[in-house]
Amino acid sequence: MKKFSLLLAALLAIVSCGGGKKASPKAVVIYFSQQNSTKAVAETIASSLGAPTAVIEPVVPYDGDYGQTVQRGQQEIQSGALPEIKPLSVNVEDYDIIFLGYPIWFGTYAPPVKTFLTNAHLDGKKIVPFCTFGSGGLNTSVNDLKALLPNSEILPGYGVRAARMDAVASEVDYFLRSNGYIEGDFTPLPAFSGQSPVTEAEASIFDEAVKDYAMIKAKAKTVCQRDIPSGKEYLFTATNLTPEGEESETSIQVYVTVPDGGTPVFTQVLR
Ligand SMILES: Cc1cc2nc3c(=O)[nH]c(=O)nc-3n(C[C@H](O)[C@H](O)[C@H](O)COP(=O)(O)O)c2cc1C
Image (cartoon, rainbow, N blue to C red; front, side, top):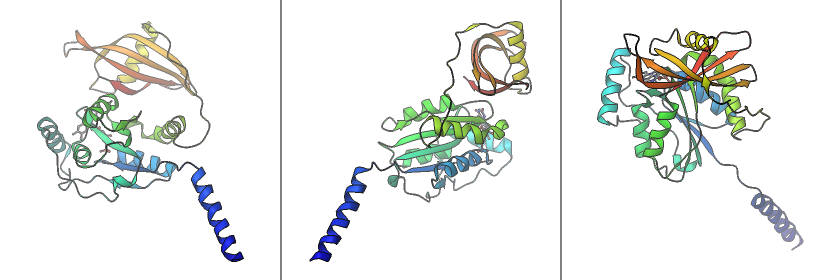
């Protein structure tokens, strides 16, 4: 009897201990990557979180040359096609929060990701998007995610240019800390200043940042800025130029960082 009472007391202690502690949400990293940039971000996130990964794999791979992939991707996005994907290695039902990774194709998530999102049961799930891109597309793809999954909670995401993969480790660390996904200190960034017309010096920072990216032909008009730990960050609004160099009616917003003593780089374009 004494033995039994001791056992019961021990069991109660375990139950009450477990019951009092809030279970941390179960996270999984699910991604598609054609050229491995998104894969690298996915692995960085998964290793920081200690979360499993699962790959979205199309049955027919995009293994042609760049032109063939562009042609197939464009046709699939325009027609709303859902390319068949292989079964996932995890069951999404088992997780509360999904870190969802994809390359930006034509301003949105690549088609195999749409197949996954359409087939999976994601109502009530939290989704943290992350993506890689040539110039941008986090904002537009997040809008598309919200429209496709009105019953899921789409949380703030992370996006990085494929040309800036060397920044991924520190940016992902900051992203995960500042959003509370991992523990650790972080310094909140100050708000941007108000917008003002660009000075000549600021216009040349913009020109320098975008000069090697053929897809951006634009003239900086206004800018806001803030200090960041390693330098300055600018948010330019720029008018797109026509092939003849005339100002058009459309504009873009471009984030540019200038590291202390370094050269300007653009980090993301909002269209
Ligand atoms: C079919 C296709 C369409 C793309 N469309 C865009 C685009 O609209 N905007 C952009 O910034 N980059 C675009 N890119 C560039 C990719 O987003 C970028 O290279 C990405 O990092 C690739 O990720 P991955 O290595 O994980 O496949 C496109 C690339 C391909 C192949």
